[in-house]
Image (cartoon, rainbow, N blue to C red; front, side):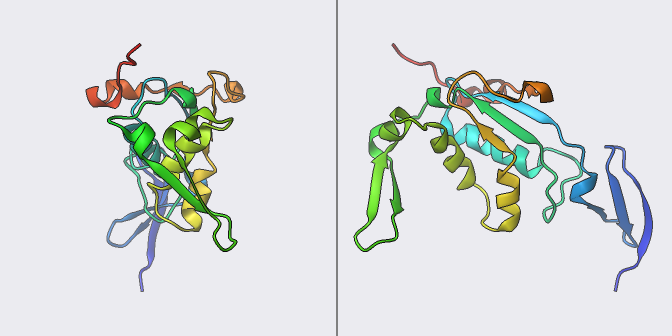
Length: 176
């Protein structure tokens, strides 16, 4: 049985409970969350989804705790202008089932992006990169994806993150 040694704060601003061995445990309510804005125009879908999933989990913070929700809010705009490498627009298919016998349905990525809800493609890419369970569902509620450049989260003053500058492979030039 472990005993609580102290309750203090770390240099990154989190309040932590320190156990006798010195391992910090971050509580979800003590995390200082930020709002991050990502422009998906010209971004490669999978590479952008990895960056978003890591920010949502909080893996980019020094006080990451795997069993706590310590990530930030992420707002993604221009989800309809995301780019795929290779022939994934026509070859990659998404399947789902209606629940009735013979009710399996599929669509290609081009069909998903051309429909009225292209933001679902980005949301599903991030959702499928995270583990399954109640914590991941809670974490995914902090992801906001929008089709165009406008979003209703201006009051939260999100900080823009340029995913293309993180790695040169993260973006593609759109060929006309």
